[in-house]
Length: 207
Image 1 (cartoon, rainbow, N blue to C red):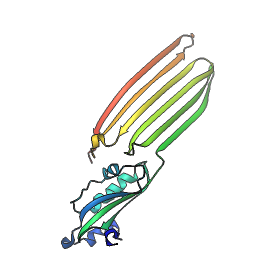
Image 2 (cartoon, rainbow, N blue to C red):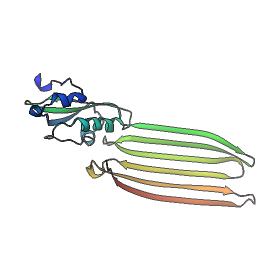
Image 3 (cartoon, rainbow, N blue to C red):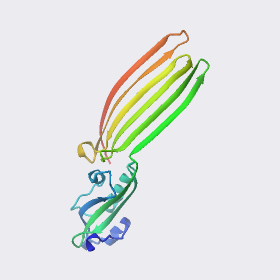
Image 4 (cartoon, one colour):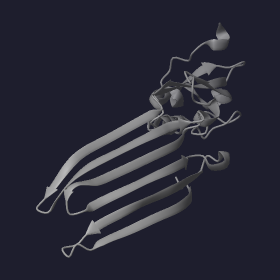
């Protein structure tokens, strides 16, 4: 099937394979292996479009950008023959990873006047909506077991959108955090500090 003939040439050879009379033009871009991830999100990391001339350096950079994401175990980019001479299809083939990342920590602390226990956990969905967006929840509990009170309870929920409003360059981070710290001094006076915060960051990739 000539319509699906894979060009068995590494990207590093494209400069030799495409002479000025045989410039390779992108006819289409396709995704494969993405059962849970949208193709639009994957192509958002490839700064080329149909009608552009094949750019070996940009395809290499796109592979690195995608391979650095926690959504994928592996990423391959290769070319297939298009509908006419000099026209090719760019294929991005991925192997998806588990979208959930989990971290847990526990331990105990003993001081001359107190004994406390620490428990912390973090759960992150690294491919929310199949679009590479992140939802992260973190909880920390530092609770007194005996002696003078020294405690801390805190948590944070954070949302990260690497392609704000569909842009390939803009990203956004929003979060809500809060907690309570309690402590006793040597005079048995107890102090409590409650906090609640909301933050939003909007940025643009320069390079």
